Image (cartoon, rainbow, N blue to C red; front, top):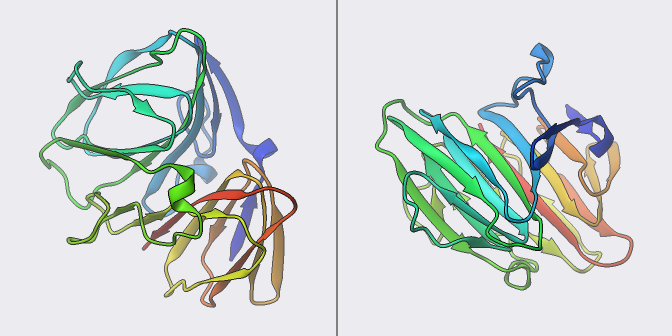
Length: 237
């Protein structure tokens, strides 16, 4: 099964200084048939206005992943001294027993665009934790190593769930094989265009489009069109 969710099918929301596109039910958007995909509960595409901040709010028992596409973002869990996350930065917040989450755009002139994903954790009542790393696009060209993973050992940010998050940038038109191992895959196109194939199915995806995949056969991805293609791929149970 492959379900395509186009950019236009997402729910658009305006809340003060932030404009958002919701891929799943969130806030005032309530669709019981679109509540989650596996352990992925939320995928929000936010743009926060220059110099603005969002009201601090509580979280618990969530794994919150933030990826800054452009601009910079201050995302803290009770630590006002955290440095802003610059373009290309990934952050994992384990809310566990409870955090107060605050977000702000420190730039007076440039909007901050960022993706935020919420995952159910592997267990409840975990200790809160925060980690982040900047991985510029040029370092992710043709790179199929996970940037975030629930595995115990490796050069990635740690998340308390059996997921692997890949963020490759494709610059060629070669075919790339993805082994599904009978797991779910969620593919989101950040920029550019790709062709996705599985069995006899073939799909063309552009910016903001996503594919929710439960396919026993391997997937084939290929960049199409001009320029690069930037993807986020979540591999999960």
